[in-house]
Image 1: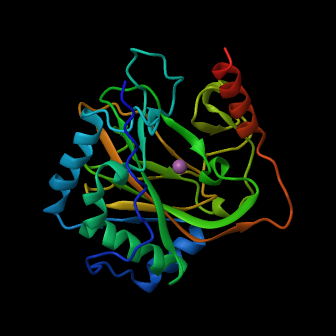
Image 2 (image 1 turned 90 degrees about the horizontal axis):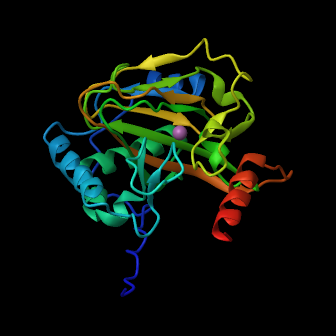
Length: 276
Ligand code: NI
């Protein structure tokens, strides 16, 4: 089989080509820092939604990223021939660079700076596509549990549904104020170490204070690196498409080391499988 080089990683941090049309009110910035999340009704022009959704669907329909291992099942163990529970593509802009030219991304980059300061930069993106009538929630987690434990971060994720997001199809839920926690214990989803997704160890945290953020298409939620969040299974008749942009204000070596044992378990399980 001829080897084709993977597409280059796009320059996410480059200034946006278009000028942002989004300006937060001071109260929205204050809400975000007080509660660790923010819901916005509209982060892209209406006419851009079908265009971005078409590019998004094309990536999934054409199986982009599969050979580069950028596409996988977040909630399963990649058994060949089985449909994914929760299909994820890492760095979709690698496969559809036009995404970074949109008004949406110009607005998201501006949003990162309005919330974290002028030094904040977009550092990546991903796409999570839940099929209709799927049974897999994206369980409770903190994004930092996925990141390098040797570093400390100030970062945020912006989650943009490309159709309305409801409790029925899997909108975002947050625990207000949880951004003030340390990274709490996680495990691979279902305690299966070959599953790439993570979950808070069941029974170790009370999520009773969670709030749901239903949104129109082209709205967004924003959350910090430690804000606890979750989306339920998609019980609707349509795909639940979400485009996610990640931004950081800083990322630097930690003064005090720490370990994320769940990442070590996953790495050991992958190494054992590769050696079989
Ligand atoms: Ni997350």
